[in-house]
Length: 391
Ligand code: AMP
Ligand code: ZN
Image (cartoon, rainbow, N blue to C red):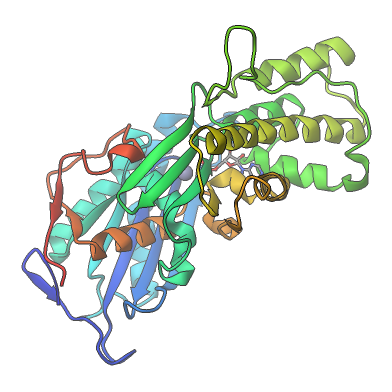
């Protein structure tokens, strides 16, 4: 039996005869209002995704995410989306409502997070069901384990979490033990890709993705030479050696300097030249990530065989290829990448991480609030956890 807040959940003894529990998952840490309904039919098979949707703020004209706009967007959309999905999937009839709610509690933009988390608290009170306040980065980290019902990758595994807001290399020893081996001292890689793409004339709501699509039109042309000035940051110099840190802030000015030196400070008209420039900037950004992972493996003398790459940028084909080519010789035997829709922010990953936590006995108190900063290394140092009986 599984007990939380005085409620006993029935464990499925006969497969598919008795449902284990249903999960409503909510993610609103940035500019997406995301909801997923997961059916945890049994503990021995992966949960079924009944429905997953997201409503994204269009920031094309603003040239980036404006926090107050994102907060308003999430607050306006999340209750409508939850209601729609609950009604359309008939989870609103007696005996069909969710049994557990998982919602992102941090890290992220406080105004954005609050939209989803407050709704989750409210529903938890109204339905008298447990709430799990999930760490957003844990969601990215664990989502690849969902389709094997937590069987793979086994711990320990190494991860590159690379998104619009974060870039870090993490060593995970268990659900609750994570060590950040490399972190960024300034902006995230996704942010740098977006800035470089914008500087070179790419537009849209997700510039990194648009850049990849643009480059792909000129696949056979990319390796040919082009006038460019770009180099990896944080390389060894006379006064510093083997630094385990990322830095992506310089790439924007490296693009500007390239345009100034070779292209009269203008975006080249020739799309092939443009594609080669974008390709090369992207490649060096990826190389910076991988160089530091190799260094971390060497410095820590890691014997880890499983590698996860997750977060919005991880859907990039070129990045995946470079990781496989360069990390295999460093001892990595198996690579795990989420399917593209689970790379960017989504509520499914929050639902799955919440399930892993819940089944390890964790839930979150009422009266808790969202947090802007919540390092994955301090998952349980945040107040408001309650650990209850799981047999
Ligand atoms: P996230 O913060 O996890 O939602 O991811 C968003 C970030 O991922 C943005 O910076 C996007 O530009 C970037 N991104 C999404 N798809 C791709 C892609 N295929 N290649 C490179 N970057 C991408
Ligand atoms: Zn994210």
